[in-house]
Image (cartoon, rainbow, N blue to C red; front, side, top):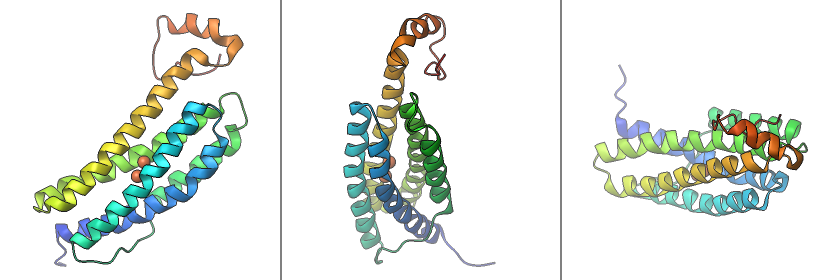
Length: 184
Ligand SMILES: [Fe+2]
Ligand SMILES: [Fe+2]
């Protein structure tokens, strides 16, 4: 049996998310470009700026554990971003382009919430309060970014497709659900 510790696992996770944040930062300009609604463009632009802070907080966390920042390729985020790229390629130009972008971006935010949530719990468990606090700050911003995307998607229910508006409103009367933004 190898003698790997929870701290080793946390360091592996830091390297993994360090790779992911940088991949997300590089992927966002194309997604922002493809966004149509100003509110969506603004939310994603704001989150790209926050992503710079996520990267620098991770660098501080590496410093706190006495290590140089180093990344390990994360297959999960590569897959999520590749799929997002394909979805935007297929639907980006259409009427429901923004819905496709929110769909793709929320997969990224959920991935980040999952990783930062677990890593924060590990850092707290290990008594690494400085690392835990850095991870908590980023986790809070990932939640806020995800919530902003949810609000935009819900606003989109009433804006969907102009001429379909009355139709969509009628349908939404009794069914305000996650699929309410689907075009008729
Ligand atoms: Fe992030
Ligand atoms: Fe994020």
